[in-house]
Length: 93
Image (cartoon, rainbow, N blue to C red):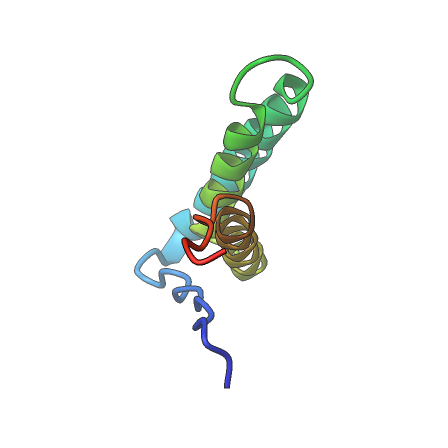
């Protein structure tokens, strides 16, 4: 058994239906992709480039299951990095 439980992505909301469903999905896709592209442009400079990319993935995750899985993977990697590099050293050593 693995000691750290894996996060599971929530289900895609199904409350939006009817004739506005497709325009809503297209709008979320456009906003999410533009946010990711802005983040990618800002990565080389000083600033929150990666944070903006992750926010774009979060926007896409509101409607797309693949983006939810990607967001869970990103969160798991971030937790691993925090544990790996900011772990307090043992007092016994």
